[in-house]
Length: 551
Image (cartoon, rainbow, N blue to C red; front, side, top):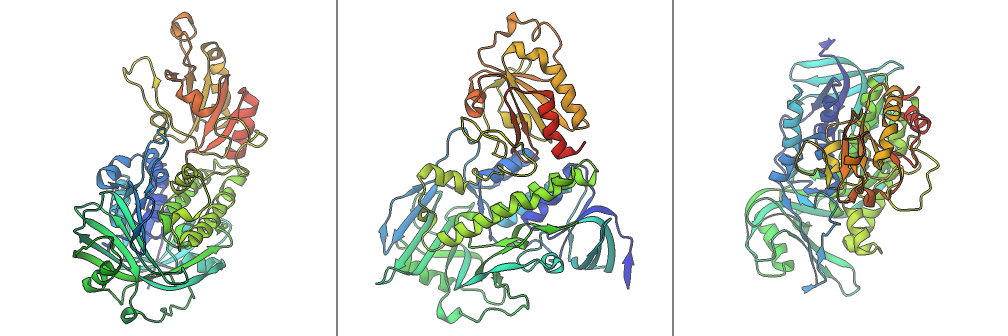
């Protein structure tokens, strides 16, 4: 029997891994009704994806739950590399001081727990043991068929988001191509404790090269919360090897539940490759997995979209996969929220594919290239390499919904670039400075107006124009130059100013954003610059906002 007319929602999210949970949480944070379903009866207790990139922590800061992640994770300091037992130059994970977060490690089940608890704060819970089995879309919405503990259900929703992994029902239902290939090697994963005295907080990559220089044995260990605890990965021994599973879709990727290595299998690899004698113990979980590299031809069609592993799969090198999927979900969710509310310009939702598919293509190519030799394989200087691994260089210049015509040269970020953080912003009431990201947290679009105090005279007109063009959906903050003598300007300290005012007391905003004259920056909900106007004009701001919100 098929039940119809279940709990209505504007969006159905299929899949409750970190990607689906991010999409659902951001939609609910914006007041959009949403259901999220997952075929598994419970969260898996496996430390699968463990690396948390600094950019992901910036996302969680903006959403409002980064503290929980920081308290549960461990710092990733760098990587120790060994080739045929000989130590190689140490890789230090160092970022510029203005970047607010460092690299971290957190078991995937903990990432899911944290986001799921945040989502529950909005009254939305994952519907476990419930699977999307088919869907049909039309001009007004999507009709979905679900099966779960209560039997079959037909659900009508305005949008469907597939975050349902490498074997995605949503991707298959859309008929998206998923071109790529599979690696022949099989690998083992395990969550164990080891008793070596290597420096805490460092990953370990130990390789053996054969006579021809090819890698024929490898061990990768990532620290986890807990004394001596690591997630280890290594090649599968012949005794555990098996033919690829035949699941009908031709995609061979992920864990294989039928085979679980024993502690002795893990110890044998440690005996061969560990840089010092070590004993593994307290194994919490183990599995065999295979790796493919594939990318969809488009990230959606009409009212149905895909994100995360449903759109791109690749080697786990550099902990890029889950983090890329979380950014997919966040990029999509704020645009989807505006579309549900009828406040999005026609091009806004289509920009999801235009912005995120090139990112997926770059990540797939880079991780395939790095899988044999590690992240150092790319010919980049150390600073650029670290920023790229941290996913801080992802950008959308050329996107159809960011300002065009701004020259690429010159200091500071351009439209489509990540909006950098800075400190030293002071107000009149609080006796302590704040970060720029403190001003952005929990908000949607934010217009930052920069200049000396005399520029404040024009703030009322600009603020009014922006609020009119965006139907009140843009917050406005003024940041005054650090050399402003506000006591001498009655327009600031002696009278009312129509927007919050902060002073760039250390000059960090001017330096990071490359400005000295009056300027305006539109920061999108996902932390990227939508526009940069020097000097700011009401017409220029209205023109940009019309691309996002329509007219």
